[in-house]
Image (tube, rainbow, N blue to C red; front, side, top):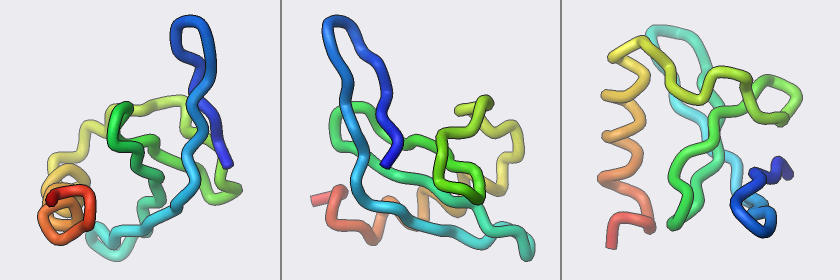
Length: 71
């Protein structure tokens, strides 16, 4: 479970999700306050937290529209 340092503390993610983008699996966790945390295969946070591939964000937005977070 990756944790992200914020001012005066840490916030840890708990649910891991996957999306398929042109045959490549993108793993991430989502937190209502902090948003998406992109993960490596081993479950740790990726160094780059802002993918430049527009298709990744398109697929993420499709996931978000059908997720329980979009209520």
